[in-house]
Length: 124
Image (cartoon, rainbow, N blue to C red):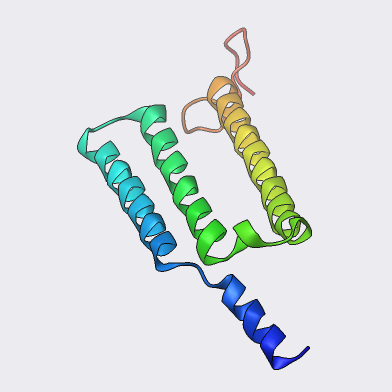
């Protein structure tokens, strides 16, 4: 590859400065919204859902623009996104299993003693 072709290739990967300002502004707005979740004192599932949504949107902006994934080939994007999605599904399944295990322990074990309580009130 000649020097002029390499130079043209490098220039294609550079974004106009306005793109960086737009992304910076979007990150600023999403961060402000994330902090507003605490300021407005949202609680429970709503709070954590909003925080995670804002976090994923910010990560998406950073990956798409600053890591140039928006402009990459489909194969490279899939090589990164498919394993990440697979891990997210596995983490979700582990979370569900952990909740099921804790619920089962709360239902069938006596508080703190580790003694199994049966339906008739006798213990083993």
